[in-house]
Amino acid sequence: MQSAPAYLQALMHWDDLRFFLAVARAGQLSRAAAALGVDATTIGRRLRRLERALGQTLFEQTREGQTLTEAGELLLLKAEGMERHVREIEASPEAGQHLAGSIRVSVSEGFGTWFVAHHLASFAAAHPRLRIDLVASSGFLNPSRREADVAILLARPRKGPLYTKKLTDYRLRLYAARSYLAQHGPVGTTAGLRDHPLIGYVPDLLYAPELRYLTEIAPDLEPRIRSTSINAQYRLVAAGAGIAVLPCFIGDADAELTRVVDEITVTRSFWLVTHADTRQLARVEAFTAWLTQLAAARQGRLLGT
Image (cartoon, rainbow, N blue to C red):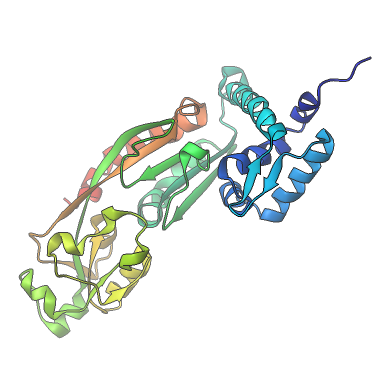
């Protein structure tokens, strides 16, 4: 009896193929490891096992990372087809009334920490069989490379096989600790800001141009105390180190902070992004619907009204 083609044998090891797809899309073991939440040695071990099962080399090591061989390109086509079938099964009514599996959400550090995480318990309780990865960091995973199922971005992507819609606008204002103003006096005008230490991002380490707040307020305003982390900036303000632009959903949440130069506001938007091929999966639809409803219900907090 003739044995099945090698790629069909490999499809029986779907978990190994999941690692293969991650490396094929990321181009590097380290990036694939970050996307899957495992270490690079685990991915390397799975790839070697897959190559032994197939009797073929799937990647070539280059200076840039891992590049698919001809055999790897062929397997990629087959594996992506298998992936689509798996997602169809997961999304089908026969899969059960309760969502299962996992969903990875990439979101900015501030929004993830101060807004999404604050309410995520309700979504998790409604879907007890669903594993949720909340990747809240300075920078974003890429939905077009399938690094995340859902991403909340600061700007609308202009290319890639993506489905994008605006989630919500949000506002930012200048904040200082009440104790700081009690010691140093009030700040009534934009010009008065120049007499105080300003807190902001490290200019050459910005992961998005939308984070350039101070120069939008006045071209010559520069932070003297700088951090890549919005949470660190908040902590600096709370400790009385100076004045910073913070999202209202952060600044207004701390009663020990107060707004400075109240007429100054900065408006930005969050964009909800999913891969076009996976946006209709039940777990993705459930999360995006939940987050959209949450943002609509909490507009006052997001806009600082």
